[in-house]
Length: 158
Image 1 (cartoon, helix red, strand yellow):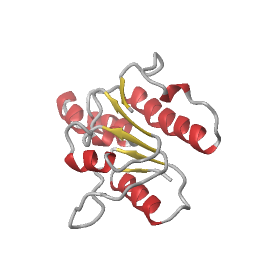
Image 2: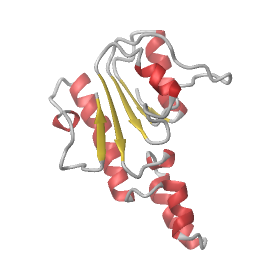
Image 3: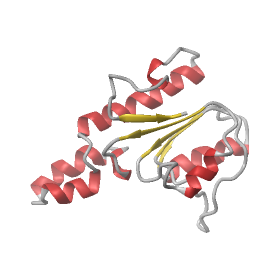
Image 4: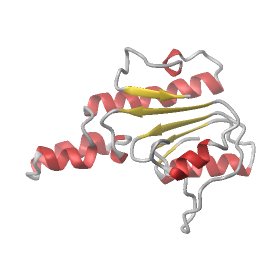
């Protein structure tokens, strides 16, 4: 299971409620599950990938708290220039629509970050695929081993 934003948090919560979900990536999940926004604070013993932008470990206390409870395989990757909507279709749709609507390049950058939309799409597809290949198909995923020439804008924290 995987999700973006609160969907990433929902992935973690689903994993905590039972064993059905064997591995989970969160694409910029805030790791605050409820309307009262408590932090996910239970131990999780299965593989988890955090793809961060607006909610990185270094800046997000809720994400850092969640990270401290990951007892299985774990990795944080962060794409330079990405913001929250960079991990979704908005990264390509907003620039197209924005230009047609007369938004400035600066307005568009504030909405989707400075990462190239094509690169953002490649990253948001490649990393979850490599994660699932490794943890569900048991196929080595070199992309998850550390900095890659294929994605030089991605930083790692394992």
